[in-house]
Length: 324
Ligand code: ATP
Image (cartoon, rainbow, N blue to C red; front, side, top):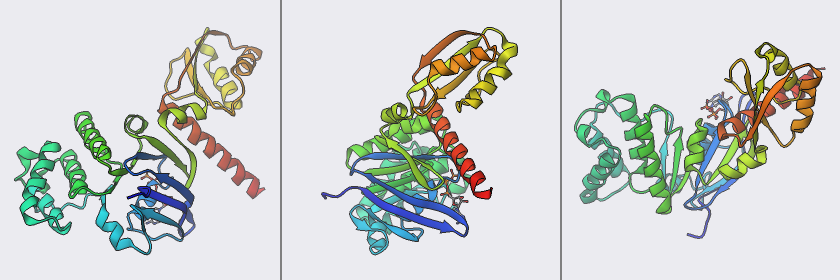
């Protein structure tokens, strides 16, 4: 092989006024699992669709399993597996028939099709319903069959667009195992997810998208560190001072995390945030009495939330300047 699993350079794609991809570049090593994280509309699906040759690029270039997605689209299609957000299954077929049909389309010899379908049905715990029509499957069962379909024939590169959607925790764990197993065998995996926990558990590296641009990349741990690496939980001596505390934090560009209680308030310190001491002094100046401070490592969810908020705030400031 000797090539990266996925290489993309300066991908750009607009839908009318919307710049869905605005210069996206990243690389995924062969056998690596990369998670694309981003809020709704940040460009994750568009990235997957262009790399999987379902959508063309306005500019930029990408190679998947060493093949150019523009010039060698047909070859790319032969070596990839794709689970998109919408199911492509035909409800009239049974689960077993669906997988055998995909195997036939993937030119798997007739003798191996049944075996391959049976192995995948067992792996995704669908063997008991293998003979039932897909139209009678639950949403989670369909999702599992969708993912199983994308694994038929052992693709070199696997694209999974929000694979966890609709899966219960047990099925999600089975799906993670299936993905890890493929990666160990050399399959390159690009998955998109809204679940930071999933990226943390599964991915070797993470790319964070916001407004069609890469705003962070790294291993899950490095990402937590880069972002700032500290979450702070304050306990207020007087719950009635919560609003004043919230105002100080918002002014300091560290808006409180959702949740908390009347007296507990949390926030994430980014590298660019003011020092904790400064924030505590500001609280003191505004008469907010803090009885306890706990500093810990942020969860990936918290780090991600703070990071995307920061991009949004920056974007709004740029827009505001532009309209002045
Ligand atoms: P989600 O988490 O909601 O699935 P996403 O990160 O996958 O979001 P995309 O689906 O890639 O985001 O969308 C990026 C931007 O491009 C959005 O503003 C979206 O409205 C726009 N977009 C995507 N596909 C189309 C289309 N076919 N026509 C018009 N606009 C589109």
